[in-house]
Length: 249
Ligand code: URA
Image (tube, rainbow, N blue to C red; front, top):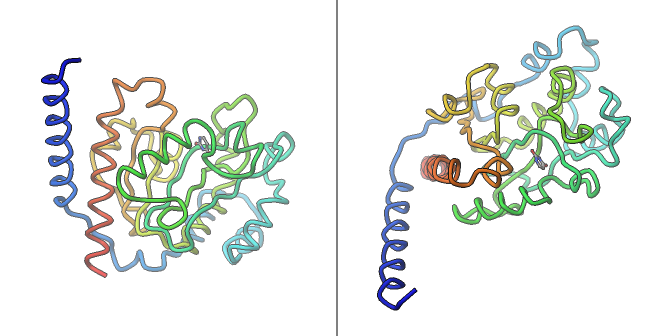
């Protein structure tokens, strides 16, 4: 590349950054009053129908430490027989954004920490680009807390068995926003069979908490040309919603 091309490239990148910065300052986002302390136990009961009421009540009353212990000794589904380590979740105590993936992969199963593999470092880069760090701003977890063998999709029963933990985590952490990565997380939380393309079209509300849907980092790593630009749009919307909510506080 000659010097002129290099200058043009840098100028183009700068304009893109300025556009992005402007877009981040725009947009609207609402968080309803109900979102301050959502009560998700009824939702958990509905989604895990047929289960003993006291089991439901048990999870919906745990504090974070006991929840982690409960996940560690959990045998609510068959994934407990094949996991090495359960992966309850990790991050800030009062997160701006709770990131919800599908299920732990091999490296997460090995370490007990969410999003430490290749998609995890890519996700860290996305978050860094919009000014968030794991420790201060984010809480990362998954729909199911144990790795499905061969990284298959978690079954409906496995998702339903694990969901009460996630709902209790949302209640305890009270994140400003939720970010669902991929179809599994988006469809179960929004109780829909709509496509991801469709679900990306708007910011949703999960019991009053604004929820943004985007592609899973592993999909973007596989098909960067197709998914990188839409993901950037979603991340900018997420950031501007968080900014608005912070301005309101
Ligand atoms: N993919 C996920 O959905 N979650 C993880 O924790 C790791 C990879």
